[in-house]
Image (cartoon, helix red, strand yellow):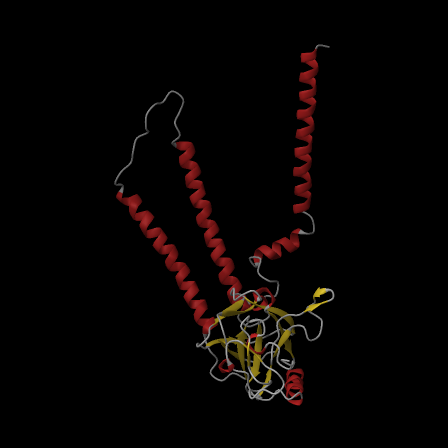
Amino acid sequence: MSQQHRTRTSRSRWGTARAATAWGVVAASATFVTSGCTAAVREDVQRGWLPPTPDTTTTTALSQNLWVGSWIAALVVGVVTWGLILYCVVRFRRRRGEAGLPPQLRYNVPVEMLFTIMPLFMVGVLFYFTARDQQILENRYDDPAVNIEVVGKRWGWDFNYTDAGVYDAGIQAQDTPNGLDFEAPGTISTLYLPVDQQVELTLTARDVIHDFYVPAFNYKKDVIPGRTNYMSVTPTKEGEFIGRCAELCGEGHSRMIFKVRVVSQEEYEQRLEQLRAAGNVGRLGPDIGPAHSLGEDSQVPGGGDQVEDTQGEDAGGQNAGRSNG
């Protein structure tokens, strides 16, 4: 057998092996796609990869439908656009033996009108559904059953339960020996909400712009110093959900984590009594200053003399209840 023949044989075998490997990858991929995990993937696609809690509030599904509908519309427009591009590439390509530019088309009024009217129509449709759903989401309750003031600070959250006249001084998420543990007591602030009750959250900030975001609610809103925003929600599912700051606010931004615990009315009342028994009576508003740590002897509710913290690490009372020694 000649060297050339052996080389061709080796190449042929190598090509066959590569083809077999490629088909094996395709087959494995097809098996993976058609296996049981497609159910979870299908659910993710149906909700646009949003958090898998579509019934946590009365308006969660509304946000999800708007999100998924917008992506479907964008996909349809994209497919049509890509199809037209590919058609033009194939239909009007230069053939063998041809030279020069193909015939040029100028000042086609119908085409120009189409390219002007269709985008305006699509933007108008998206604007209509967005404005409609936004009006529902932003609608404030006439007489909410629960009123809570949320004060953002670097890097935590204060919760004032204004109906009961008690507060919960938030802390920055704390490390444990095993890292950041969401279940370890005293390491993450928790906002309590009663289930199936209309709740109005009054949102403001003490220092810089933050963003109050509970992914499971599909809803977030900016928290701005000197400005009051409102969020109206009706929790429909008991459970515990993670909340975050969604606005880059400094070095502790990634640890500005809190929990939302939706509980029964009885457990909610018990929580208010626990705060009252702990002496957390009053309000920790935004007026106590942009960068202060509160000790045990403060003239404001919940702490001692206000001590300026130029680093901002103890800003806004996140260490309330600790000594400033």
